[in-house]
Image (tube, rainbow, N blue to C red):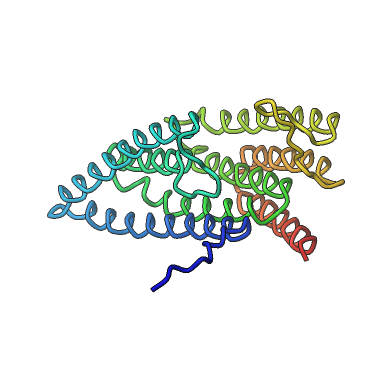
Length: 260
C-alpha cells in the first residue's frame, strides 16, 4: 500500500494551550487522588509504614524528575532539543518535580497535616493556570494578589491566638506591606514604559488594558487593609474574606464580559 503524501498537520497555538491546561488539571486531579490514598495509609497504625514507604518512593521520583529536568534544560539551552509547543519540556518537568518533592518532604516531616492544605493548593494551582492562559494578564495578577491576601488572612487568623507563633500575624502583615510596595513600584515602572519590559534582550508587551494600572494599584492596597483588619479585629475574619471574594468575583465578571 502506498504511503500517504499528506503530512501531519502541525498543532495550532490554541490546541497547544488547551492541551497544556488539560494536562495541568489532569496532573492536579491525579495528585489529589494520590494524597487521598496517602492520607488513608498514614492515618492507621497497621498501614503507616506502607504510607511512609510510598511517600519516600514518590520523593525519589521527584528527585529523579529534577535531575532529568536539568538534563532537558541543558539540551534545550544548547539547541539540541526544541521546546516549541512541547508539553514535556525541561521547565515543566522541573516545576512538577519541585512540587512533588516539596509535598512529599512536608508529609514525611509533618505527617498528614500538610495533606489537607495540599487538597486546596493543587486545585488552586490548576485554576490559576487556566486564568493565566484564558484571561488578560492584569486579571491574573489581580487574582494572584487576592489569593495571597486571603492566604495571609487565614495565616493571621490561625496564629493570632497562638503563644508560640505570636510573631506570625505581624510578620504576615509586614509581608503584605512589602509585597504591596513592590507591586506599586513595578506598576509605576510599567506605566512609565507603556507596559513594555525587556527580558533576555527581548522587548515584551504586557498588553495591559487602559484600567489595568488602576486595578493593579487598588488590589494590593485593599488586600493589605483586609489583612490588617483581620489582625486588629480577628472576629471579622469572615467579613474580610467575603470582601476579598466579592471583589474577585466582580472583577472576574468584568473580565469575562470583556472576553465575549
